Image (tube, rainbow, N blue to C red; front, side):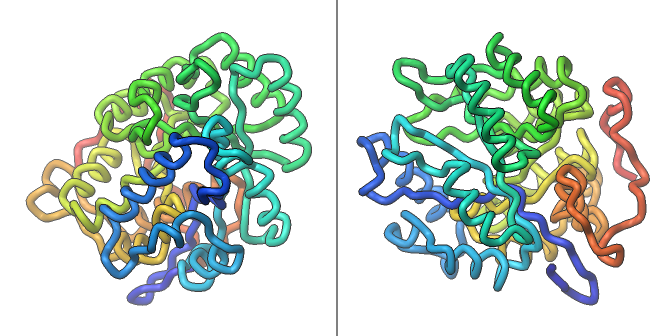
Length: 346
């Protein structure tokens, strides 16, 4: 929980990792390039006081993770989002099993998500059932640009992807997190295109598609899709750090999201360990859209910040929130697809 000026905020960090990017786990130059690219994001978008060395960045201990998230980071609950990348890392970069080992030791702190790849066919469907049973999955993280042999990616709208989404529905896994937007070396940018979200969001209205990184740099594409599809959400991982280095750009991002979606479909995330939640939470609570932009984009209220920082993700994952930290029922509703049109700021 975070408290500032007498206001209290329940914090859900909805996108974190427990990765192993050490040289000993790098299978090839692509693994080395991948973690170096992550580090460049960290180095270029973090305040100087929050910078780590590359060696610190390779892997974090259990003690470091607990300290950064819960002891100083204000986080009440954190959600692991796995990224396997088994073509680049010997034991995988950040698997459900790695995350789950920590989640089992601290069940009151973590939620662990699974993953699947439609290129695994029938065997992958069986594996998904096993993961769901083992970890009581409520969510899945997908990486459409992941390399597998000669394949450099896949689409949510691929026939086998439909089979997996049907299986998620059958297993009660409703939260489908998809990395869409910023590319990471050596993955192909176009394999992270947000366009295929449109197709599956319409086909699977009972599933919630949380588009991680809000499609950046394709924010406009994401917004046009999300306003038509009430089961599409925006995850702020990678977008959040611009609050420091490019505050007016961040104002544009959050303003566009509030205009095209609403305050109920935006979730906070640090993308730990690329960034730590402490400075992001503090900065967001202090942040306001500049006055000269508010005519078009509106302003951030305390209740909107509460929803984005934790309450929206808590609803997606049925996380109990102390009544005193909740807010009154939202005045707006995403409604039916056609009715989720953008709103003119008051």
